[in-house]
Image 1 (cartoon, rainbow, N blue to C red):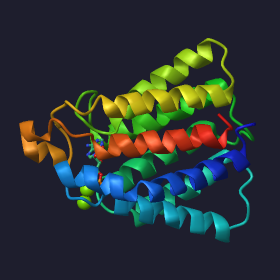
Image 2 (image 1 turned 120 degrees about the vertical axis):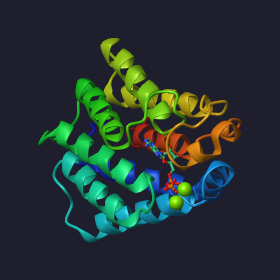
Image 3 (image 1 turned 180 degrees about the vertical axis):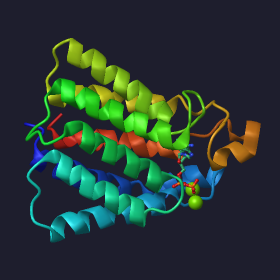
Image 4 (image 1 turned 135 degrees about the vertical axis):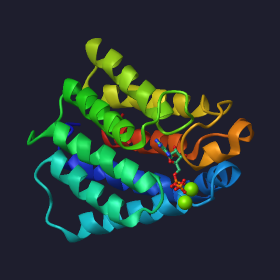
Length: 211
Ligand code: ADP
Ligand code: MG
Ligand code: MG
C-alpha cells in the first residue's frame, strides 16, 4: 500500500499492539540490565498515542501523524526512551515534510533522520549497546533495498529485518550508554531493551505497509 497518512496511523496502532504484547518481555530485558520499566514505559506511551489518534481528526499527511505521536511519547514515556523515540519521530516527520505519501527514497531519508535524531540526543555510537544498534543497520538495509529498486513496503521490511538482527547482535556487547552502562562488563549476555523495542516498532511499520 501507499505510505500515506492511513499507513502512518496503522504503523502506530500496530506498534502499540506489538509493544503491549511484548510488555513483559521488554520489562524482563530491562530488569536484567536496567530498572525493569521499559515495557511499562513503552506500553503507556503507545497506548496514549492510540488514544490521541482515536480522539483527533484524521491527519492529512504521514508527517502530521508522526508529529502528534512524537509529542505524545515525549510527554507520556518516562526515562531515556521517551525523549529518544519522541525525537526520532519528530525528525522523521520533518524529513517527510508535507508529502501525501512516502516513496522509497523518502522512507530511507525518514529512517536516517530518525536515527540521527537519536544520536543527536543520546550521543550513542554503534556498538554502545543501545537502540542505535538496531536503527543503524535498519537505515543501511533500507538504503540498500531502495537503491536495488525495492518498493516502499519492501524497504521497510528490509529495515525491520536488519533492526531485529541488530537487536540480537547487542547480546554480547558491553553497554557504554544509558543505565545499563552502570553494570559495565556485567551488561554483556543480555539484549538491549531499546534495541528490542526498535525492532518491534520497525516491524510494525512494515506490517502496516502490508510487508
Ligand atoms: P531508563 O533507562 O531511563 O529506564 P528505558 O528503560 O525506557 O529508560 O529505556 C532504556 C533504553 O534506552 C536502553 O535499552 C537503550 O536502548 C536506550 N538508551 C538509553 N540511553 C541511550 C542513549 N544515550 N542513546 C541511545 N539509546 C539510549
Ligand atoms: Mg528502564
Ligand atoms: Mg527508568
